[in-house]
Image (tube, rainbow, N blue to C red; front, top):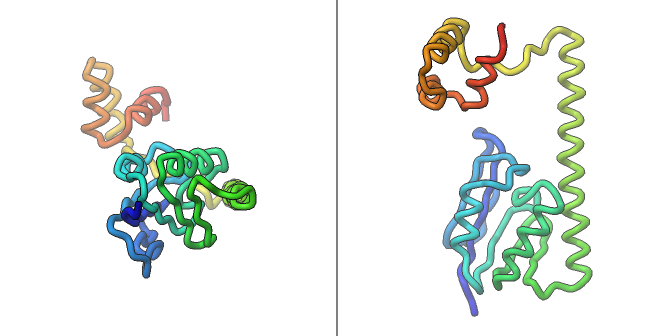
Length: 186
């Protein structure tokens, strides 16, 4: 049964160009997530998994766009192929159908391990860069979500008994960030 070609695109940051990933590739529909690959709970990935049917082909630019660790990659490929959905990775030139040879499964494992290794290297370089910047006094960390004045107002209103969820929405911060502001004294 011949189905549709469905594209999946993931960009980690808002300044990355999602169109670049599937340019010159014919697909009937594209699902695009703007999220980190380490997060498996991605809205458009979930939508894609619900949308695809037996006979469809999911087209992804590269394995690291689908998942950043080997376990997640294997699980997603298996989940799709068990439903009769082919998955095609353009950069690696690999296609998985569920009836794959031992060599194809080895390639999935090796390429997935490289993606996981690359992510670990990026994180290590980031930590090293931050440590060097701190030594030079150039690293100030992330910009605060709230000004000092907003923090005082937030604490006063929380102490007066206002709903934490409502305050978080009003100040446009997550509830976790709200609780961090309520815990710290700076």
